[in-house]
Picture 1 (cartoon, rainbow, N blue to C red):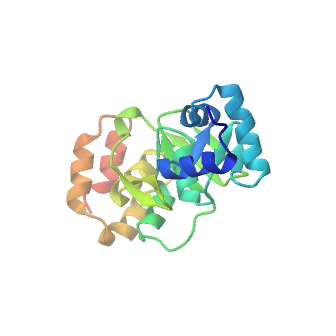
Picture 2 (tube, rainbow, N blue to C red; picture 1 turned 30 degrees about the vertical axis):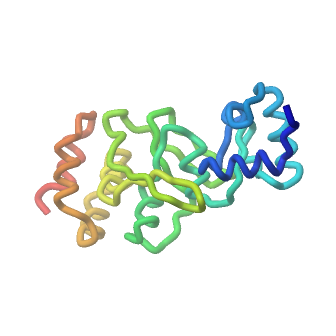
Picture 3 (cartoon, rainbow, N blue to C red; picture 1 turned 135 degrees about the vertical axis):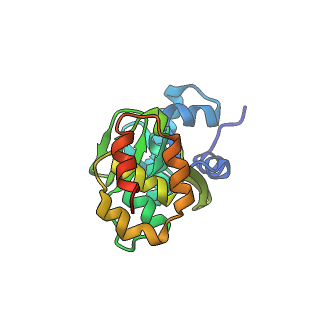
Length: 192
């Protein structure tokens, strides 16, 4: 079998639509053992064809939305970052904020933070094309609900943004809640 070049690996990665790869994902892409994929990953970074994010993860893009969404799976962009994505807020948050069903994680060197949410709250997001790839982003209504659940947003935030939100979607999401803290969340969005 013909030896793969670094450029052909990068091209295959870009064609796949995925921009962030773990060593195992790269091994699957090039159909080689993980040990060989690790060598290729190091060479891609050395030749500046990819960027080292953290140990065992490389990226073929600099787009913060794509990186944060694809680095930890399952996750989706939420909170302030989702509100920025949907043009609800104009101020760029100091870090990308995502939610995941895995344990909370923080990568200060990358400016990314993952908040753990209950698996019953893992809904209310959509897939968007971005930078020849994809991102999963919470609807603005769900980003606000996630923020209330995580004690990041309050009634004051809801009042500030409610003119830009779909009240029917909020009602639909509130009916789906089956997590601890659902009464606290419902209280913020009721009686407005």
